[in-house]
Each structure stands twice: as structure tokens, then as C-alpha cells.
Image 1 (cartoon, rainbow, N blue to C red):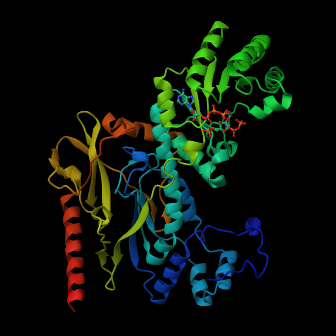
Image 2: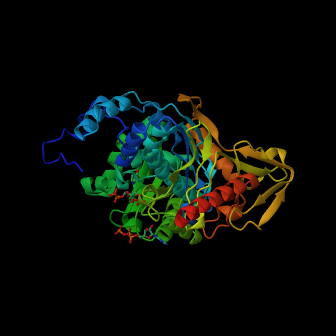
Length: 499
Ligand SMILES: Nc1ncnc2c1ncn2[C@@H]1O[C@H](COP(=O)(O)OP(=O)(O)OP(=O)(O)O)[C@@H](O)[C@H]1O
Ligand SMILES: O=P(O)(O)OC[C@H]1O[C@H](OP(=O)(O)OP(=O)(O)O)[C@H](O)[C@@H]1O
Ligand SMILES: O=C(O)c1cccnc1
């Protein structure tokens, strides 16, 4: 391990004009690449899949996100001069650096589209590329997909509880650094949040931005009356924060007084509650606003909200119209990692033939499913509801089977036969031999797609608590292939133990 920290002062992290994400990887990827290159197997075609083993938050589904950034990353993938200089400093040979210098992503990617509902053990993405390239991109890909899918899933869960009311993403200040805030805001929007407080996310992605004001403004002017007036002088649309001193005795009456005084000069959109008993305070504030003739004024609420508190507040009859959710959404507070993995499922052998690969584990759920596969959503044409997902080998076409047998991949006796169905393929070709062939949909299209997808699921899979397990089944051929490889490996291992 080399440490150049004490040897010299390094330039500030943003001082590299040509900094790239090629080094945004674990060192072992570069070391493995060097070994493949030295052994001259680096060009062999390899196929990797990205999937997770357990849906986060004990939810019934996850929402796939991250593809846009993955696309940009792969398009821009190259080792720049400062990247190579750094690796040189770290002791890598000139010959290897020369190889890295000309490296670009030349592989193919098949992926679910953003906003797709995804379940445990089904490939979200499939990367087919020369071994070295596929290996080098693993870490960054997982980094992007893990986070964005996690946040989109958390946001979808929260949005399910919020329903038709307005939901706003307020998490930037509590996010795990700047990138997380930006891409988290986007993931939340995909899952149905209407707006974000992050202005840069508005600029970069076109997400609608919103804002009220903080306690600091009331404190700066010392009293609510002056603060609300000054805010109104600068902004026509006004939401006054009413809990700095005493919500019902001072905040709400002052908001009403200022709104009355300014009349049509402002759009009095409502008030925001940020502490105390939000159910009680919202009910009382509603009565006060209505009595003052502000029936249209909305009540905004914030303060460590998540799907549980929101559901509880609704059950208590809280009169909240707009929900601002920060910390617990953007940090995926109750489950900070999705745990998606990147597994090799096939590789070219020395004769140019593709060979399926498997990773065995004592835990049956961790045994990988070998071979190039496709994922289908089996939609019942009668009721337009999904019967489950069906993972088949790449040459199979379940649409031609009628009835289609769907059986549980672990408890294989649990089976059903489906007729009158549409087998909708979930993967799209994104890159073909290094060339981008996919047109990314607009963000609101992605949001709509996610919402439409939820319509395909029975409510039993969408409930917040103890949802039913959505079926993700393997085709017979896929299952047989897996069993064949397990048997082969067991035989090999057995032979080795005997020898
Ligand atoms: N009626 C309610 N039922 C259930 N949870 C509530 C209710 N009202 C508020 N909450 C939640 O309870 C928590 C209260 O947080 P906290 O203990 O920090 O109180 P607070 O009123 O915000 O005090 P502070 O002034 O210190 O911020 C928040 O997560 C809030 O969303
Ligand atoms: O509660 P969250 O879900 O994380 O939502 C974001 C929070 O950020 C602000 O509080 P903060 O105390 O940072 O600033 P403030 O002084 O404006 O209240 C805001 O008032 C919300 O409570
Ligand atoms: O605009 C708001 O009310 C806001 C923005 C960020 C965090 N909390 C609240």
C-alpha cells in the first residue's frame, strides 16, 4: 500500500482539469484487469448481471433508477492523463498504462428502463463486454444503481402513503454529500414526488423547485409580523412558517393578519408547520384559516416525516395538504444500502465459445443463476394485472407457450399455469458494441411510467406492511441449466477432494 499523503501536499481534489470517473473504482478491479491483460484474456467476452437479493424496507417492490448516469459514465469512460499519472506514481507499468490509455467502453448493455418495478434476484442490467472493461466498470455501476434505486424505492413507498396530496423532497442539507442530494432528488421525482427544494436539481433535470422560508428569517427580523411582510414584499407566492414561537397563539394568527392586510397583492398559498403535534396543530390551524376565509390556503408539514409518521398522521385525521420530506427519504434512513451485486454469468473460453458460469453458496438464495437471460413481466390480458415475472434463457420466448408454467425457483412444487397473457420484455438495448442506441425518455415520462407500472400490481404487493411476495420465477430451461451447472461444479469439487 502506497501512501503519498505525508510525502507531499497533493493538489486540491478539484484541481485536476481532466479528472474522470475511470478511477472511481476499487483498486482490485485495476489489479484484476492487469492480471487479465498480462495473461492476454482481457479481450474475452464476459457477461455480468446487476441484481439485488432482497427488496429494501421490507417493501413489496423496488423502483429501478440510475440508468441516465450510467449511460453518461460509460460514454465518457476513459483514463485521462492525471488518472494515468496517478497510477504511474502507484507503480503500474508503462505498458499497462498504455493499454489503459486507449481503453474505451466497447461493450453492450441491456437494462431495465428507469421507473421499472424490479424484484429480488432479477437482473436490472446485463453488461456484455471484453472482460477487462466489464470488470473495471463494476464499482461505479453498482455505486450509481444501488443508491438511486434505493432512494426511488423509499420515495415510492412514501408516495404510496401520501397518495394524491403533494409531496416535496427537502433532503439536500441532510444528504450524504452533494451527489447524493442531486441524484436522490431525481430518484424521488421518478418515484412520484412532485418537486424538490434543490435548485441545482431543477436546473440539471428540470424538476419543479419549491421553497417556503426558514426559522432564521423570523429570527432575523425578530418577529413574525415583520418577517412575513418582508417575505411578501419580495415574493408574491407566500407560505409562512408559523412555528418559530407559538404556532396557534402567534404564528397562525400573524399569517392570517398579514394575508388579510396584503389581500390580492400576494398569493397566500398557506402555512408550514415544522414541530409539535402535527395532527392537532394542523386541525386547529385549518379551523382558523377557514374561519378567516382562507379555505384555499394549504397546510404544509415537515419534521422528520417518513411513511410511518405520515400514515399515522393521516389516521389521526391531520389536515395536511402538502408533505415535505427530507432526512428520512434522502438518507434511506431505515435501510442505508440496497446491496445490489454484479455477478459474472458467462464468459468466452479459449475456443471462442461462451460458457455459463455459476457461483455456489451454502445459502441457496445466494447461488447465482447462470447464462444470458431475459426478464418478462407476465401480464394477464383479462384484468391487466401482472401474474409475476419470468426469467428465461436468452433464446426462449415465453409468449409462444400457452399455457405458461410458472413455478417458484426454490419451492418448485408451487406452480401455476397462465393463459391469455402478454409477456412484456423488461430489458432494452442501451449500448450495442460501445455505441449508445437508446433514447433516454424525459424525466416526467419516466415518472409516468413508474406510476403506470404500479397499476399492474395487485394491492397485496403494494401495501406498506408485510406485502405479499411477488412471484419471480425461472423458466424450466433456466432452472435446468442452473441445476446442470451446480451438478458439474459439485462433481469437479468432488474429484478434487478425492485426488
Ligand atoms: N401527531 C403525531 N403523531 C405521530 N407523530 C408525530 C405527530 N406529530 C409530530 N410527529 C412526529 O414526531 C416527531 C417529533 O419530533 P421531535 O421530538 O423532534 O419534536 P418537535 O416538535 O420537532 O420538537 P423540536 O421543537 O425540538 O423540533 C417528528 O418525527 C414528527 O414528524
Ligand atoms: O425534517 P426533514 O424531513 O429532514 O425535512 C427538512 C427539514 O429541514 C428544515 O429544518 P432545519 O432545522 O434544518 O432548518 P429550519 O431552521 O429552517 O427549520 C425544515 O424545517 C425541515 O424540518
Ligand atoms: O422550503 C422549505 O420549506 C424547506 C426547504 C428545505 C428544507 N426544509 C424546508
